[in-house]
Image: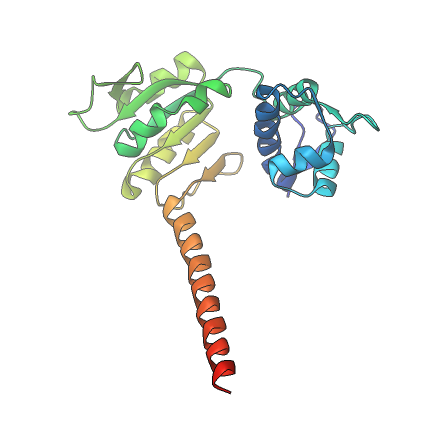
Length: 232
């Protein structure tokens, strides 16, 4: 799967590369915060957790090859990547579902520091309406349409229980939201042209549990083999 560049409509960037660009941006930000002004592809790849050949290929889609013997200008490459993924501008975001997870997301400073401005927190629970979270008042979900029109919102975050998620997504799509970040444990059905990114913490934990089990089984097998060898 590929996607067209946000800055050059004729250029196509592979989806896997697009997924790694924010990782490179985060690594470059950390390097800049440490006072580093230039870095080699090997240093940046290590900071980003990828191999240097893959990083160089990814950055070549941006037309950025670095300078031989010098490497990459950290600040300029940060700007290139930020412009490519669209975070040099301010993106208004709404969060629907202000339970424990919604509270945590509303308080997440990474939204503000990376170009995303939470313009509204919405919930259907009358008991939550009027509460203030991270300086933003919780408003009724019925006000979604007015908020989207007022702030020209294109990105919606769903942090509701699973049963409510599809209905929230349907309403978001109906009023023009075209990108959804879904934290609800549900698979959303959306029309073509609407992008959904799903974050399922329980699945990530289960994947880690699988690897832990594999390591434990491997250690057990190694111990059994060593015991058998000793017995022989």
